[in-house]
Length: 424
Image (cartoon, rainbow, N blue to C red; front, side, top):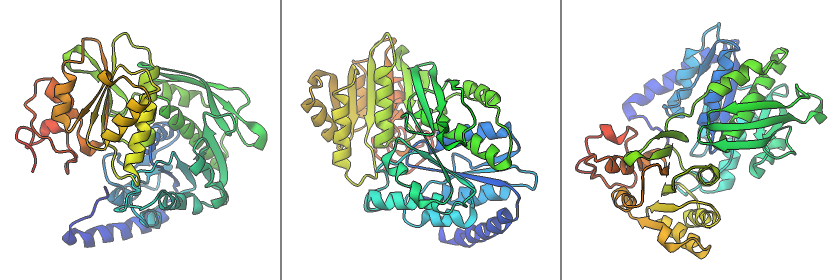
């Protein structure tokens, strides 16, 4: 959902964009941009932490809409700033063009493509979404770097559309930078980074061992992208790269709340909180993680609907087919689109007594309460505006009566005036 300012604020926003454009274009700062359907915020956050130890860095605020986040960030750049880092989200045609009126990156990262924002109210198709995001690397200079998730077919196929140097990263061995020996637990993730030196431009022959408190396979991509950025930055600045201080930063990083963060749950349970975004790729990745981690208690998945999809029934059905192959003890599905998830899971052989459908979060909490026991692990998945935190609030004894499926508010439900009587 993109921000549209009230009509009386539009002249102010237009003037700020004009000033931001002029200001940033006169700053001797290395600009870096990140886009993609998933992983943008985590990747931007990691890159920011790494760049800060390399020099003064300005970064977009992860809590602000890109439309006005970009000019605000541009105006924070000072003559002594070394790096300006921009997260560039798009959800409608020509939005990337607006960002690129101000941002002129020399390094760009594309994290992943999912069919989110492909409904008729947004891009209308996956092809249109890909074309819009691809504009970022099309504008890169020949001495710049396009850092692409090489495991994603749609992103790998973007490579011919840029004149910049291309580096593919991913878990597969056909990438320039790849991950292997992956171990994932509820305390973090470890893996080995290898460098394919066939191009003669990568910095190391020896593999790197990476440890992090970030949880889940998708964070491996974010870390690989971030290490690629450091390499590209140092290549442009002609600096020798010592990865040891950057690996220490990665080791200390903790998950952002609501992005695969482990938290204390209701009724003496643990919660793997992934409730700030939901698309097919991030949902699949989270469920794989839940299935693969070792845990003594039951594993319970609570899934809200995914929105803004071109083929929502099909995409929810794919999640159902995946669920039938995973080791998850109980599943609670919220919202009508998950009827397709339910059916595909049952078709795939998932036991009918272990998968439950709820129309809304209140019904979901009532279904969940008799299922959970002390020590169980609850995976909570939804997008910010679905506000699935209400399920946990209800289980914690909060007087929650709001049943709305999609909410217009971004704040946490604990602070909402409609919590106890519902939003109409």
